[in-house]
Image 1 (spheres, protein in one colour):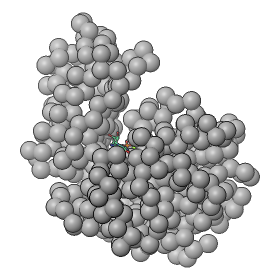
Image 2 (image 1 turned 180 degrees about the vertical axis):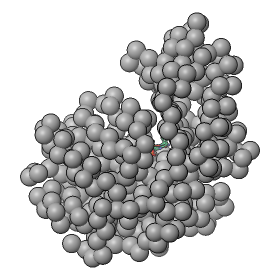
Image 3 (image 1 turned 180 degrees about the horizontal axis):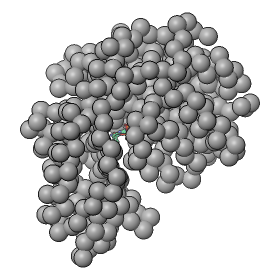
Image 4 (image 1 turned 90 degrees about the horizontal axis):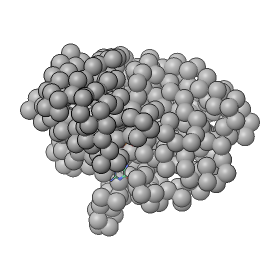
Length: 363
Ligand SMILES: Nc1nc2c(ncn2[C@@H]2O[C@H](COP(=O)(O)OP(=O)(O)O)[C@@H](O)[C@H]2O)c(=O)[nH]1
Ligand SMILES: [Mg+2]
């Protein structure tokens, strides 16, 4: 594993990790690196993998368990990318995962000292940060917010993301809040527009100060923080006899889901979907019941059929989540005169984290 740099980018659901992996992959490829990416989820069929597979880089998915509970699966994915020629690997752990310093960073340093591990960077959404510190009201469960705080405590670097949506005064305020509450240095970035990214890349490429903090994690609260979220991954075949404007369909489906979750008072961890047809991809995203719906891709694209992947992490029981999604998908499809055939569906509550390794001191 000589000469391979490993960059792990953490942060809660919808903090912007996958967007950052995309930005990093193109910038580091432009710098001459052979980049490989690793995604991670509790279940297969990830929108993130579909999105990143559209880039020119190699992608591996570790699914069915988080990296910390499947350390071997994580190392196998790294080895497989190295075997394919990667010399820089960027990995995105599950957004509801924490204690990564004790369960991933220390074991990697201990067991794979030749792997050049970058400082562990944790991204945070400005609103989720304020909600976690109870500076603004919100509807995310306190145990889920407990995870957000532990993630920021164990970071070697913090990235305040989405600063393109903030005024200079709001950025200063958020940076001040971060420095008051968490030990790691922070940078203000926009994963979407690339602001602040080059400087951060220079810093993490030059440093091997990874896993410099261990945080005390109460596994009962952590497990409950994960278990309050229903977790749904589905793939759906959409077809019609007429041409459909897919970005309108994505917009309507997300609007209808958002309305249902608002009326059920169920906070959203994230709802994201990708819709593909003939190499064209439309992406839809919803990061919270208070966030706007985000639809990206060619808004004029029309066709008679498309494949959809839908990932939803919502504060409701898996059973309830599945019923809501099935009902709203059927209703929205009907309103577009579409047939929506669910081809795979997994809906679960994440199990109690049971890490392969858990170090109690820094290596
Ligand atoms: N305005 C803005 N939106 C962003 C930025 N980074 C990510 N997003 C949006 O935040 C949502 C979640 O992003 P994603 O990368 O999927 O987050 P992840 O769950 O942490 O992987 C998507 O709608 C993104 O378009 C950013 O820098 N600025
Ligand atoms: Mg992601």
